Every structure is written in structure tokens, then in C-alpha cells.
Image 1: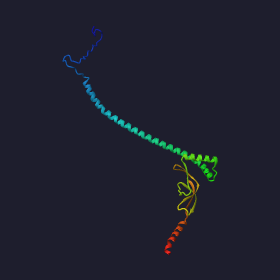
Image 2: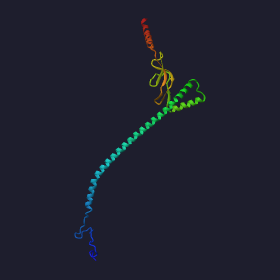
Image 3: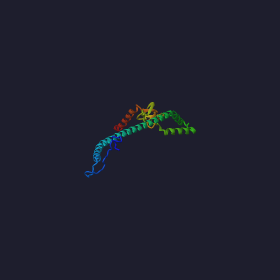
Length: 213
């Protein structure tokens, strides 16, 4: 029974897939192989150049972004560390400032010979503790007067000094590292106003002796 008699109007399609042409006896060239291979190579080379350029640009951009983020993070970490140190120093300074009157009492007791027994051990422990935190006392009789670290409470003239000098420490000063917590309170003596003329007169008298002889 033919397809038409069977009710179907379509006829079967026959494809000749033989690689050798039966008429010429030569091998057939596949139309899909050579042209597509050639076009494929050209397309790959053409698409490779833009793709490689865009990948290089993208890599450079991402590298710059990474370097910028790394620099920002490094600056942030340094800033946080500076702030942390500053806050710590401020807190320590505040506590030590409140302890200065206690240290003054200990110093006066030591000067009067009252620092004995258990009180002496407690005071030594306290002074050692504040010393570990960086607190140091300063101010010694005979120091040259420095208005940046000394506070003059008394003033006088003396022939024994040649420039403003701390002749008495009324209250020691305290510093933590390079920061002044309290200036040393001192009595200051300046050279006597009459000292310079007297020295000049004495010098002229001595020089005149040999001439008289």
C-alpha cells in the first residue's frame, strides 16, 4: 500500500550520506567541515583580541581597587591605634592627677620623719605602682627656672645666682612621659641688682693696683 493510499501525503526523505560520489567515484567534501573550521578559527582570533584586552583592563581596575582598599584599611588601623593610645593615656593621666594630693602627703610625712612602719610600706607600694604607669616627680633645688615646667610662687634676689634659679621646691612637679601633669611650685631667686656693679668696681680696683706701683 502506497503512502497516498494509506492516507498520508508526505513521502519519505532519503539522504545520501555516502562519502564517495557513486557517479564520479571521488570522495565528497563535507560542506560543514572546511568552511565552518575556517570561519571558526577566524572568529576565535577576532574575538580573542577584544576579550584579552577587556580582561587586562578588568584586572588592572580590580588591582587598583584592591590597593586603594588596602591603603584605606591601613590608615584606618593606624588611626584607631592612635585613638586607642590617646584614650588610654588620658584615662591614666586622670587617675594619676587624682592621686597627686596623696603623693604630696606622703612626701611631707617623709620630710618630717613620720613615714614609718606599715604606712611606709604602703607608700612605697603606691609610689612603685604609679611609677610603672609612667609618673615621675621632678624639681630640685638649684634647677634653672623654666616657666614651662615651673610655677614661681616666691621671688627674691640673691648674689649667689647668676640667672633665675629655683632656690626652694615648695611642691614637686609631676609628669607622665613628656606630658606635664602639674608644674613644680618653686621659690625663684634672680641675680642681685647690686651684684653686677660691685663686681665691676672690684675688677677695676684690682686692675688699677699695678699701675699705682
